[in-house]
Amino acid sequence: MTFEELKPKVIDILHHDYTLRDEKLLQICHLLKDNIDYYDWVGFYFRNGDKEELLLGPYAGEPTDHTVIPFGKGICGQVAVSNKNFVVPDVTAQDNYIACSITVKSEVVVPLFVDGKNIGQIDIDSNVLDAFSEMDERFLEFVNEQVAKLF
Image (cartoon, rainbow, N blue to C red; front, side, top):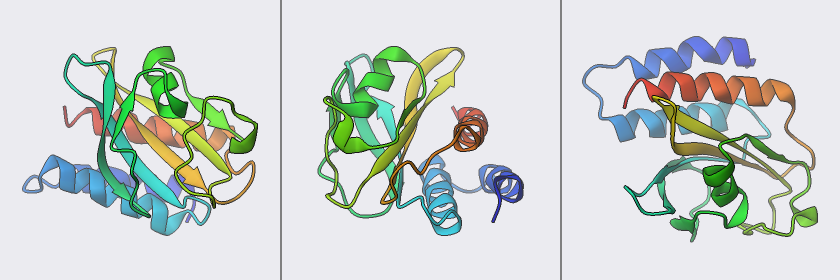
């Protein structure tokens, strides 16, 4: 399924009035993981109130030990500080990387903004080297723009 075909499905999930926010986010994670073959782990992290740390939110994929990530640590922690997308073509080439699984080869993290404030991010791991393009970034920015409306 193409990114363009997935966009209306994302909007549809987010417009279900009687579904809890975390359930909608979980459905988004599964939609992306199930329909984009190189998205092997899809999850959200959110800032923990005023603390400089991220808490794991809904996700689809293998369970992770990384339920709390300090700002600045790993790719997700760096995005929490930089407010910028971070594409990692080869995780073995990154110094500040927290390994989730030995099978992960590349990662993309896109921040989630609500009223201009970075409240979290979507994180995608791939078992394929150099899996992510600018098209992935634009699509994930679209997803986060839609998700932001839930907050």
